[in-house]
Length: 248
Image 1 (tube, rainbow, N blue to C red):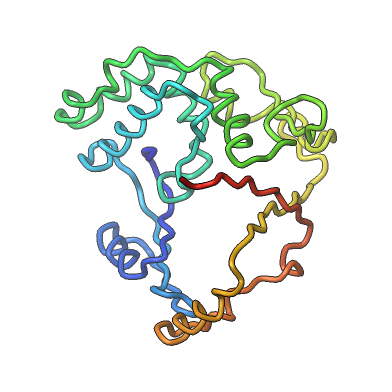
Image 2: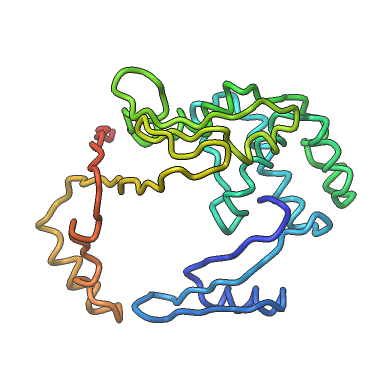
């Protein structure tokens, strides 16, 4: 969770309405072909809020005490925990303990005193940031051609101009290269480029499908057949191989 304005998007329509009442902001609900509706509400995480401050602190504690960056992926659960535009702020919090402690001074007293954040000296290196934002997510997802610069990689790169303020540094790359082609140069978009939809096609027991469909159609208002999605909806896409791990 990051302090500031964002948007709550949830499959729980009543929760969306509840947040609308709390914040007094606009509220959108959609109930067509959904199990419990959905709610979209502008929200704000506030530094003086006890709940919000704990959400902020617990997330940082987790990152700063994790031993292996190869088992971590950077995320705010966009947009509910904060917009992906807040990623540079997270990176600065991880890399700059002085800045972290400065933010802690504005938290409610109980969070300042009981959270570990103020006493954690760890500062992520630039290499570790590259791992948890690029290399580790690619490895976790089994994307052999992503997250590295070795033979067979897709040549997707983001290059940044060094700055002491890491948030400012990561807010705007100097170059963005996609598939070996420069598409952003000094904040100027040279060529808009649509990517591919990555998807898996895991094996499953097709003989069980009629039983599942029967149960589904007896208990849900949405037909089981509505959930099938053909490849014609994917556009440019690539199937990622599934890795099967035998269960004990």
